[in-house]
Length: 360
Image 1 (cartoon, one colour):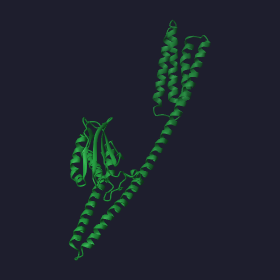
Image 2 (cartoon, one colour; image 1 turned 90 degrees about the vertical axis):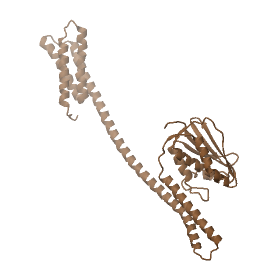
Image 3 (tube, rainbow, N blue to C red; image 1 turned 135 degrees about the horizontal axis):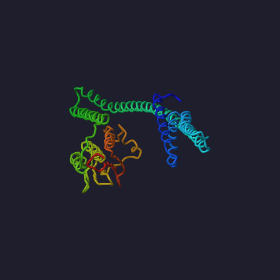
Image 4 (spheres, rainbow, N blue to C red; image 1 turned 180 degrees about the horizontal axis):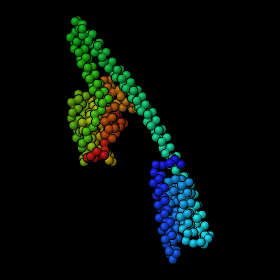
């Protein structure tokens, strides 16, 4: 066993304990056999201390010292030979020294094994963390590469349209009607690029939510009023179902408004020839739900899995980032954004937020 810096103090503690027990034991008058017998068991204490601190060797050495402390004073005060019971008690001391030493050694070996295993697990955990960090970096680089490729693809088409329109506008013989058309193309594609960059920034650099208590029904009505002129151009009627006693939720109202604008605008654009966009706000368990149901052609089954992927869109002029941003916002709010079918026709989107006037 390796020496310890506090070994002298421990040896002194054992010696003092053993001396105190020996003095106390031999000071008890023979007229008190019960007290004497009880004090005799105290000789096991320094043996246990020696075994615990110094292993089996310490236990046996302390047993020898306890034997001396137990028997020697008896020889000094009496010339009578030791009795068989006293030899049995000495044997008990030696036996306890061996047992305590073996148990202490076993406990020490197990502790060393546990410490070694713990160290190996800690090293393995650190290596796993390093591997996980490497995988995350690789995944981020892959995602950035894919994002850059998609962005380049989305930017190329508007730039090509703008470039072609500018070349045609250079012609001095171009009729005024064509000139107006090409200027309109440039303006339209420039707005598309601006919208794409805005959506890209919203997706790549998300703003941290500023939580407060909000009324989802009021937000839905506000967004419906905001989109009313756009809906009227497409002959779409926005209907908000009557809901009462809908509790407040804890959210960032501006970000949830952004989600609702995206969902309602998608619903309006899905019905270019007119229809009804129905908004429902209601309570379901411990959540407030906002449903947005249109009467358009619906969403193909093969598109459902890709619907929330960046740059995926089923619209001719869409950026493919609106739903991806909306899903990220709902995730940061610990809510849900779901999509399904609106019977008998159309699509149905819904958002779910936990009820509460304080952060959950």
